Image (cartoon, rainbow, N blue to C red; front, top):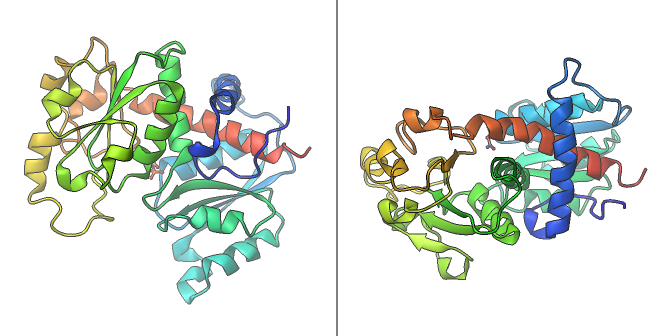
Length: 308
Ligand code: CP
């Protein structure tokens, strides 16, 4: 069956069956990533532009690796080395890139809605690699895929806590949508100043007390403080934040045995979680990175081959 969508802009466009189709494709690509020769000819002759107007380590590198492992040609453009710095608009930049006939453009931009804006103007596939506070669909897909593997495919009956700066987090928004769609009960916890308005419309349980929030959970996803997106005055003191909302070993006692720890990265050890937690056996932080390559291979494969 053909993949129905030209673009991947957020997870809210995906049904459970479509998410599972991405996971099943990613599962087969996980195997390729363990071979001594990690390359298949699936996307030979196709080209993917990686246009990252915001910094990235994991997302950009893993899309690059994903494309190359499928034999696509990948081309990178950063904001600092692009003509955006000379006043060219995003629209003119991507129309310029499209004239070189890529099969997909992967875009990260600080403006919410940037990926949708260009997807409506381009014929090639557009993948949202993070747009402002709005969405980070491949992050949510790789997080759910990592949990699917850790929980042997069982999402129903599981409870996951998302902890930290919820307001400024596109990861939280995409994860809440996807995980609740898959049947996970989601809690969120953070200081009131970092919880978005109208949280009562989100399908989550809201906490401001971390001890209460972690009690009995199957997994905790810690979030980085998005200081680059915050206004002054939301947090009186970072050390106080770390003391009140940093995940430490004492919280592990309150969770279910072998509860999993996730973090989309980049992590700030000693801020949103302790080093001991980041490195413990039940931490899935590096598994998330490995899943990220396979999920991005699956997304590029489904979008680029849908018309072949
Ligand atoms: N999780 C994530 O998006 O990380 P990068 O900013 O390093 O891509």
